[in-house]
Image (cartoon, rainbow, N blue to C red; front, side, top):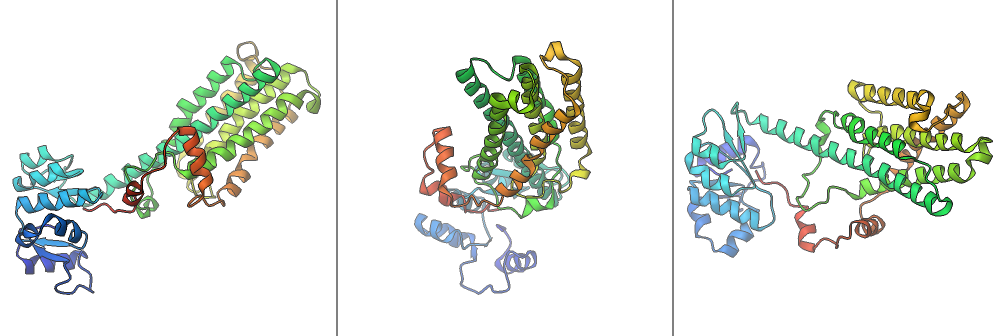
Length: 370
């Protein structure tokens, strides 16, 4: 807390707000005055800035110095203010928040976010929705990459070995319609939960595709590739069908795998992927529409989609193979990824990225200073 009030008023307000704890001791460096902080050398400011919790009798220049020191230490800094004297700090901070009713025009122009109702609890709503959007993007990326990796490898292996691809252009277009449109709608409609607010903030240098996503992605891709390659090379003999029916089984199983994998993508870390699913009626509706369209494509659009009608037993086999992705996801999430070099190696090999620097790794643990 940085304020222009005297030190006694500042300490009383900080204690009431919980900024100063019950174990606060005089001379601990948690409370300083602006002139004292200003007179520190640069090295002293950098050293003591993390200990400082309250700055009293501060000037606009003192606020700016505080923001600059925090940023130099790798922190992501957010500043709130409503006056003209807050403008330099608001502009220098990574995120500036000003008040919409009582704030001055100068403060509003210098800030990134304007709180229209002047209610600081609105910041929590912004954070909750921001984290929700970030989490939903990660879900969709995991879902999308799983589909693309599986489809690419299956068609590549089949083309190299047999000279033909099991998934035709029309079928791949249909799969991409499921992934890009219906899949995005299904996974982007999860509303924010209080659980998101208990997670630590995400560092700006942290990759969007985490080791958790790589773990889930690789497990599902390997499973889908395995069963579809078995169907490709042994499907005719196993099910005693001709080639067109075998290709239809491959396409149908592949699409149903994506439908079941949409449930897995809802929870990146939790094993119970059905938690809160009844609250998202749109997700269930999209899943129902996807299955209905798949049935129509297989059973009634034979010439357009290059498919053949399947018997109920064949549909049951496709559903069983696709549903097996649920227990796989459950067991895979038991595998720890923190401190596991395998996922880092795979990630760096695919993305051609160098390992993060020690400074970048250290900055991940730095909290947001508000």
